[in-house]
Length: 173
Ligand SMILES: [Fe+2]
Ligand SMILES: [Fe+2]
Image: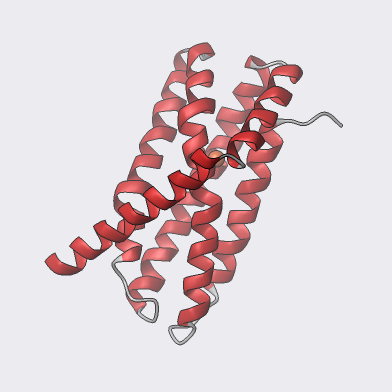
C-alpha cells in the first residue's frame, strides 16, 4: 500500500491517545512514571505539531476554500494554546501533585479534541485537495525531516522553552 501522510498523522494521534490514557491512570505517587510518560508525549507531539505548522498546514491553506481556511485557523489557534499555556502550566506542576493530574488531564482532552477535528474535518478535506502521489511524497518528506538534525534541535529548544516558562510560573504563583 502507498504511504500516506494522513495515515501517518492519524497513527501518531492514536499513539498520543494511548499515552494520555496511561498517564490518566497514574497516581500522585507514580512520579517517575509520570515524568517518563510526559517525556514520551512531548517527544511524539512536538515534532508532529511543528511539522504540521511548518509544512502541512501551509500546504493545506494554500488550496483550501473558505471553510478550509477557517479550519486552518482553528487548528493553529489550538496549537498555540497548547504550546503557550497548557504545556508550560504542566511543567510548572510537580509530578506528584493533583495540579499535575488536573493539568495533564486538560492537556489530554485538548489533544483529543484537536486530533478529532483534524481527522474529521481537515484530513477529510485534504484527501480531496492532495493527490495520492502528493500525500505519499509528504509522508516521505516528513520521515526525512523527523530523522534530521533540525527536528532534534527543535526538541531541545522547545523543552528549554517549556521548562523556562514553567519556572517563571513557579516564581510568580
Ligand atoms: Fe495539529
Ligand atoms: Fe495532528
